[in-house]
Length: 371
Image 1: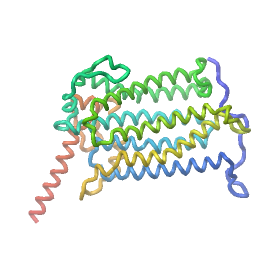
Image 2: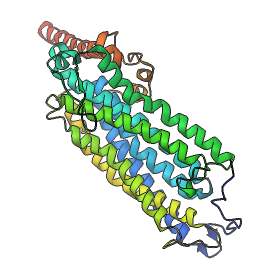
Image 3: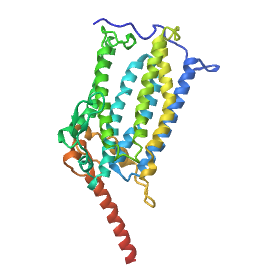
Image 4: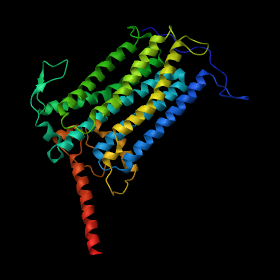
């Protein structure tokens, strides 16, 4: 396989950010300051949103997934800032950044399933699914029909989404290796002589299957999701992916036409830098949008004491559900079977939480009467 031309100029800017006369403001350093400020603002907004959920951690099964989703804007913002600052290694940062998209999509599926489970008898997702009749698959497979009550269907739906959590990191690792050997060549587009076109094809198939699984589950359970803002929650995730992809396409198209190389930066460097800068700015708005779409107010209990922030944060980093293992890090979790076990849900965890809070209320009431 032939090696691709370097994306970087041989000449390196040797000037310092700070000079005797103050800050050496050029276009790159102005963008550096803007990207850093926007990334910091995104982190602050996301921290506020996350902490509000942590202090009102009344539904661990749902809020665990929400916390994982809320991490998306700061992850994108910080990594985009680093890719702008260290533009010669842009490809490596970009490949790490997109991995979190896979984890976010899987967390969103788990959240939808928790919403559906909450609407079923006995907090069981299968109670809601059992009411569904045989129906057609969404476009483009609408000539096939499926029966939602079949156990294999729900397992298939789960792994249709979770496979992306496996493939996307693997694709990034393969791309990083190819980049190190100078055979990835993203700037060459879909050139069959380089590895990028093959990795992009695998990624396209994988994410298409994952998104189809999400659309299928949403169409199946949209009645149960009324009042949960499912569309806003999904758009908060998918718009990030759409904006980053389309603007990257636009900047790439401008290379050699509007964007021209300079002494220290190639056309690819400038296009990548503009894309990273745009992402840093956009993440401020997406962090605010997610704060609204995944509002902490829905989980506040009037008169309840704020919960500790450490257990929710620990729960949000636990990814046993990817391995098909039920969540166990929450003190409210317990073993479940059937449909819920397939998705790592916590119907019993919710029941345990309700029982726990109810018993505390009874004890407090009894103590009050005694005193």
